[in-house]
Length: 176
Image (cartoon, rainbow, N blue to C red; front, side, top):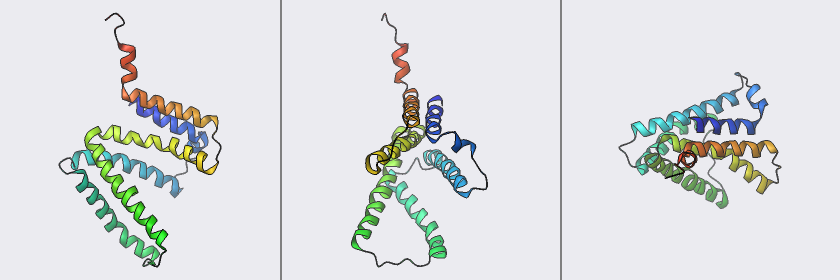
């Protein structure tokens, strides 16, 4: 719990105090982010308990079919029938996103859930800010301030605490 709290503190440090103090309950975007966060946390716990008897491939298939069945009517109501006259590069990007970033990601998600457990699986989300900021620096020429480095260090400390090996180094008997 201490490691997860440190990780969250690192993300909060990167975001800055204004992101925490400017919360507005009438802001739908902020509520959507909080809802997604809670949903992700509950999904990991629910997946571990309710889907334990299924293979990762079947869990991923169920997740993708279920979410598609939920989203198709919503898309049709708000956007109408899709325009399928897309270029080959757009179709390639869509297939790549569907196969790699969605289907394969869910298979890996459920496989890691079985092997590493819910807590370890969900800690991976703490890596999103460092990677997103790092990719912005490398590919978009963005500048990284000192608060990002400090936040990264706090997140890394959180992972070290969660891993437990840090404490085993300090708790070894120096004589024996």
